[in-house]
Amino acid sequence: MKSQNTGLIVFFVIGILSFTNCKNKSKPIPELAAIDLLRGELILCSSEQFGEVSFSLSCNYDTRETFDLAVSLLHSFEYEEAEKAFVQVLDADPDCAMAYWGVAMSIVHSLWYQSDNSYLEKGSKLLEIASKIPKGEREKDYLDAISIYYKDWDTVDQNTRALLYEKKMEKIYNKYPEDNEAAVFYALALRASADRKDKTYKNQKKSGKILENLFVDQPNHPGIAHYIIHNYDYPELAHLALPTARRYADIAPASSHAQHMPSHIFTRLGLWDESIQSNVSSASSARCYAEASGMEGHWSNELHAMGYLVYAYLQKGDNKNANEQYQYMKTIYDVYPSNIAAIAYPFAAVPARIALENGRWDVAANLQFHESEVKWDQFPWQSSLLHFTRAIGSLHLKNLSAANEELEILSTLRQEILDGGNEANANQVLIQMKIVQGWLHFYSEEEDAGITLLKEAVEMEDITGVHGITPGKLIPAREFLAEMLLAMDKPLEALQVYEKNLNVNPNRFNGIYGAAMAAKRFGDQEKAYRYFEELLILTESSQSDRPEVKEAKTFIQQHTG
Image (tube, rainbow, N blue to C red; front, side, top):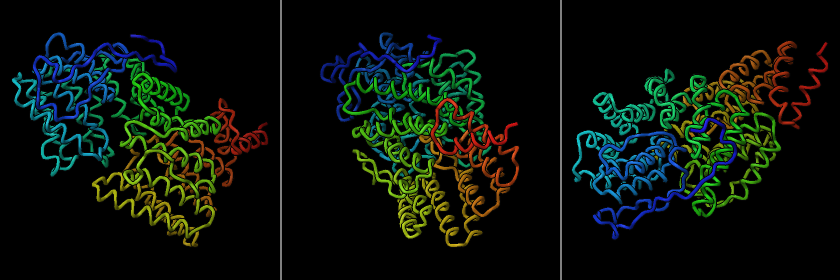
């Protein structure tokens, strides 16, 4: 295990493990011919670079190293490579029931919504084949558990199936106390079934405690570290995961996702330099993977890292590097896989953030969809980001009719999302709608109605939280509320809102600047000095050219001595 930081380059080599076609296997499985399994060369480094896992149960001895590697990949959400590895185990050992379990686990992305149901059909067919294979009691328990997730998928909603799976994993966890993987996968199931509206974070804390106890004896286990971060990926809990976040990348240095995941915690805590380092490394790793695999275009993990990277640059006032990332993104057209949410999101969010964070209202009002292979009609929530940005830009330009047009589009997109059964994403759009409606009232001289709507947006945002693929809202609702209060000449109320916002979204550039301006307007020069000083500390390594930084320097100079 390497203790040093892996830096910006992760070297990939083509795995020496090869695959065989069904017709060449000594013991063919004709049923698998109808299932689109991922076969091909594994694009990875040695297994040590994905962490340490031992969980091969009753598969043939010769396949155990591959099986354990597959589980390690699974724990770092390297889903496609995990599936390839499990299929290689199947090719070598068709009677390995747990390899079927592994493929079924690899095609379920339990922590986020999958709109395409083809994976459920595929998993159901696999598990039907696995049910006919002789297996031990523990293997049967694992297969029965994941089968619950696939059972009646066309009539039972995802949340219900996730809860049923969690209960099955709890039984396995209690039945096999010596099985650490049972504990790890039960902890993941707890996180996956957590109620988004539960702000006590009951499931996350329970899961985190299980994992923390395991981490003492298994400090190089990728799943334990990874899932601790997911459990505490909230402003109120993020500090609990900081030590783990600083270790995970070294546990699995060959995983692009493992390089990126710590930045979730760095973002929640406003540690922008660490977030930048994390995502530069992740994007570099993803590019290496795409090149080594012969992929045409870019891997989705690269774009995902870029979304977080631009956010971090903007919080340091570093428009130069943020814009460089955006210009590079404009050259990206082909991304694999092209049908997942992590693709459309950065294409929409990156230009929207740059425009909104910098108050470029003309740019925001005229923002266009990125020209790529993304089918935007398949991504209504991501599309809403662009229309929301247009609305905010139009509002600041006092073009209320254009803002109203964008509001109507947002309403249509929200209904489309609701019809698709994704209430959480629909609520994200509803928050955007309330913000737009609030500013429409404000500019129509209905200030009280505007404040009421923005307070509703803040309340909803607190309950809903942020989507799992985003580092944060384009602009937090509290910043919009504080901005409106300041425009109504209520600087003390604005300051109080800005300060509460900074508790939830620490070290945001505009949050700190807004607090400084509100304090200055209220007449609290000491507090204004402190916030302007914070802004200068935040941006001192980025050589920011934002006018707010110049304003902060001028204020500090005038009030020093």
